[in-house]
Structures are given as C-alpha cells and as structure tokens.
Image (cartoon, rainbow, N blue to C red; front, side, top):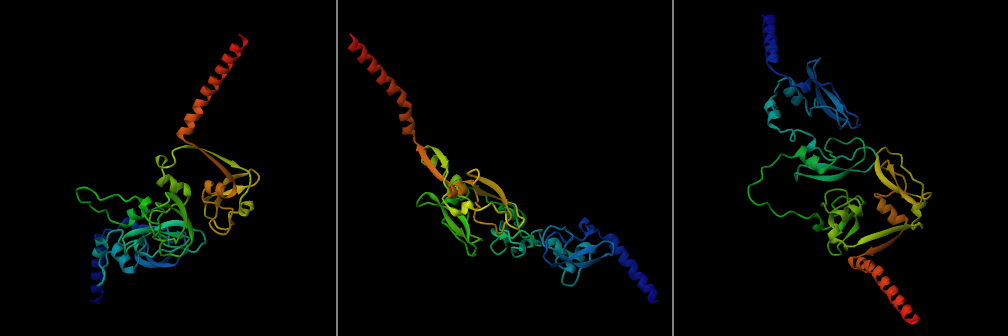
Length: 331
C-alpha cells in the first residue's frame, strides 16, 4: 500500500513537471563571470533538476542567476514555498528584481573610472568611481544606460513642458563624497570655466572633465569674444613635472591621457593604466600645453580685420602722391 502511494505521488509530480514550461534561461550553464566578488547566488542545474548555490563574481555572467533558492525554484521548477510564489517573480519588473537595488561598489583594483549607479532612494543615477575589477552589476557607462535599465518609462502629461534647466546656470556642487577629482564648472559671475575638486558622487551636471568641454558647452562661439585667435606655442617648459618620463602605471585600464614629450616639444597621447604613474599626465592636450608650453595668443576682432584690409589701399595712396610730387618737381 505504501509503495502504491509513493508511486502515485511520483506520477503526480512527473505530471506537474511535464505541465510546467521551464524558461530557456534555466538551461544556461552556471557562470560566475570574470570579476572576483563572492556573492552568494543560486542557479538551476538542468541535469540535476534542482537549484544549487554558487559564488557569483559580480559582473557579466548570465540570467541563470537568482538571489535566493526560492526564487530559482519558482522560476525553473514551478515550486512555490509558503512565503514565496512564482507570482511574486512575475509581478516584479526586471528592474525591481535586479542589480539596480545593490549598493554601488568601487571594486578591488586601483583604477579610477567614472561610472553611474542607480540610487533607489532617489530613483536617480549618480556618478561613482570604479576601480576596474570586482564590484557588482549596479554599474553603467552612462547616465542614459543607467536610467534605461533601472527606471520604468513614465507617461508625460499632455500640455506644455516645464522650463528646461541650463546646466551652465547651475551652481558649482562638490557633492557629499570626499574624493578630490579635478573638474571644471561654468562660473556665471565671471562667465568663464573654473577648476574645482569634485567629491566623486552626486553633485550636478555643471561638471566637465576638461576646460575645453566646459567652454564648448557653456561658451559657444557667439558668446565668446567674437574674434579669431592666432595661438602659437613656443618652446620653454613652465613646470618641472613636464620633464618626467611618460609612465602608464601598473594597472590595466586604458584611459586616454596626454604627456609632454621633451624630444619633440609637443604633447602626445598615451594610455594610462589608472593608478600610480606620475604627474606628467593630463586629461586633455590643451591641459598639457597649458602646463608645459608657453602660449602667445593674439585675438583679431572684426575692427582689426577691417583695418588690415585697408592697409594696401593706404600704401597705394602714398605711392600715387609720391609719384605726383616727383613728376611735378621734374617739370
């Protein structure tokens, strides 16, 4: 009798499994990913027919990756516990059940790569500095990607939109973190781009990696001095750090930087590893030239150009007068 009961339950169980449609992600192999974190996760083993624990590295991997055993079983086996049902998984959007709710993690290496993370408390994306390895998946290359992955699209009300915020009018904001990252902001009082040290998180969008980027955004051609500039760089190093040899450092990031090359007396591009190195290392070519070369700037305004165009006419007039005087004297 007991054997018959066991066989009956087994047949019922097999029938239930045959009716359950297992999603394709459950057939994926367990994949820890290339990073080195040790997050406890669960994956479904299609050969063993059960959910098992594994250590997730924190980046990449695949979708056969669940926060809890119950979530894995509900998704891949159709099993619901008293506190967890498959309906719970279905009712969550991909963002609510994903990495967007993890705290930002800088990781294990020593690079300083600007990335974005989602802050569920404010439902906004903020910058942070990633070390180059480790960390978790709450990490995006741009604010747009972060928002696209972690926020739901909202239906805008019909009617006129509110005023568009000009980022160049925003006040300089260091943010609550304590990094000392050189950035430029547009100062409305002086109408120029000024250096400041960004804390590394939050703040606002009046923040640029280089002075060139700041001026391009906040001082377009029609808002500058209106003239053409003749810029000449002459030999003569202004700073001792410019005499240091180019040094990529021991890390393996590939950050585009510039260094001063004594042999050519020019600023050259190189790939910086992200840590150590030396001070002959600039965010942009203009920053390098500003620090290491002497610049002569001559601005030609419209009035200068007009005066220049009149010089041949004046010279011709003088020559005509001289010719008349010579001819008159000869008579």
